[in-house]
Length: 233
Image 1: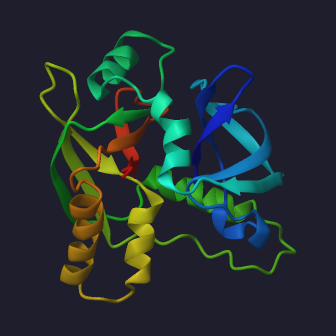
Image 2: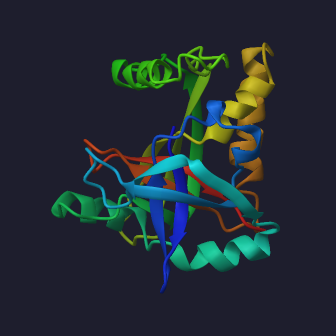
């Protein structure tokens, strides 16, 4: 699991990716929520040339604050917004070093397509197995591999680029998975309806001005996913 966040330097905030984070195995007082402010030591990630990627020392992590309500969040996040998704794509196609994370305003969301999850890919399963194998042998906490969710989603949307022809991107927001787990064994139709109500109807209801947290793949820089939805009042 990776964490998306802003690093506050001496002059300005910048996006960073903290990876890996074995969230299920954190101590209770270390577990953080969306929009929490944390303090943690980290070093540039090895094997990942994206400049935003950092490896955290989770033993040093402390939750120090929570940004609530939206006014505090907007003061920090609104200035970081990228121009368009189309421009992020262009930058990653033409340059070896380009932004791999961003907050992109949504001009129009056309659809949220929800389909059955096909299960973890071999690459994803290998990462999950590696996490489990690295756990302390003397730790008696649950080390069962993380199960794939029942459903996955893809947004079809347009950014504010004048020539935008639309984007189709998978959503890998942990909240999308967590809602499914809370609904347990509810009928598939009910789970789909609940996901649609929250991640399409509620989050994009006027007069909200939504944006997507987006990030690309290390090996396929031109492929971006929706990491979460920013939907201030």
